[in-house]
Image (cartoon, rainbow, N blue to C red; front, side, top):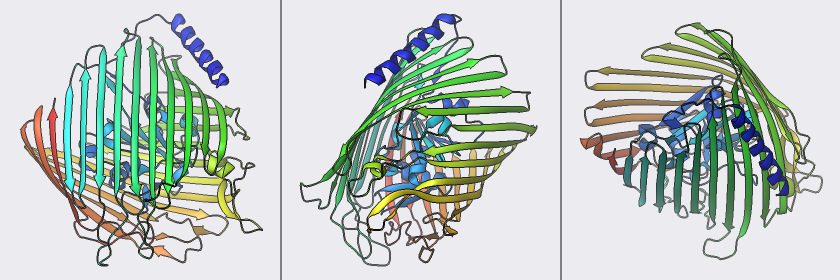
Length: 611
């Protein structure tokens, strides 16, 4: 931790130097975003931001939200159980989750369980497709998911009280208050969901006997504008989850899993005429406990503490050229029943540059190099160009090198860890097309990912499973998305649809990677009239292979949800009553072999908003 202090001192010195050299006042505006890199250096990639009614329409977890509103494929070990994404055919550890600009993938297992993330605590959730290792570090290979809280000095208070009750004795509530003044902001919320989750597997007569779960999430975000140049922000989150683990069609289960997460971050933003300086100091904590028998007191555990200092300096050399300096120091300590007691320190330096050649054409180059940790750290980069061919048509192209470092489980697991592992590397190429004829918008993206040195657990000569850098894969595909929105008097219609074709080949076997569907389709039809709103959303996942030789599969499936809402009173003081019917056609389906998902189920929702 002594090194952490030195790096923090250096960052503070840089900030002070910048502030001393620039004394021109710059208006920060009414809203301060928590993740400026997402908006300033992601124009070359496909991004989709979900907020407002979309966050409220879906149930509370990040899995539920993204299953129907993104092209990410999710593997759930039964509803509400461990949930891991496959983004463009990559695995869960190759998808980064970014909380207010900070990468929160676990250093223990390399991923985030999307069923433990409660979405009601955030102002927006953004899906960023494509490599992002320069901006966000390890794991941002297939793409990244961004959880955003925004600080607003708009003197506009709002309060939301929401209760949901549905099938399987599922009860959730969300309380959130946002108080905004000219120079201060406070956002506090609480989310809780409990469920017996004892659904019947459609058509089998078998019930999910060990699937009960509960999640609690507390959030606190606050900001204070010191003057026209300086803003302080604090972002905090506490999560507590307790889940029994569902069994399969062929084997019952009695185990459970409990985990706690604490995230806190202090952010200082200083802005001048030609620069913006951001310093983040963050602390992350996680602890899990695994019980082989949920009625027993015996468990194994893992725990990690991360201290992060992250500095970003954006400087406009001219109206057409902007640059950004990135410094990040991360110190991680982890211990557990199977990994011992270990530490990792990483220093990262990055430089990003963006040049607007004309009103039609721009390009950028980004670099990142890491130091201090025990690996042979690759220099990663990205380069892109954007050209507006016509006012209604633009084309984008980018190339990037990305990476993922070995996890603590990979390195130190007591019955097979390998401390000689090297980071995974990948090259990614993408071509994007945007066609925008209001009220119609259509995008086409082609991608190609070549990955090597992938970490794979396999048996050694003695039969013991160990991780080694042997796997390589080639992923390529096509993504289509269309939107149409129109108003006719008091009638508002909104349609959108997405399609992804993904080929993900294990180069050693020439077979499709497991749990990567060739096809995924999502769609939404939304209709509003006065105080009424109704929507229909559907999802089609193609067949996936469950074995490396592609001999066994999980069948393709299509499921659909239907919802209707009615708002009483006025918009600024409204009570909304809603009904959501999930899996309205009562389809039997699995997204992991032998682990059925729920049939038709219902959810009633009551929301009271004060604006």
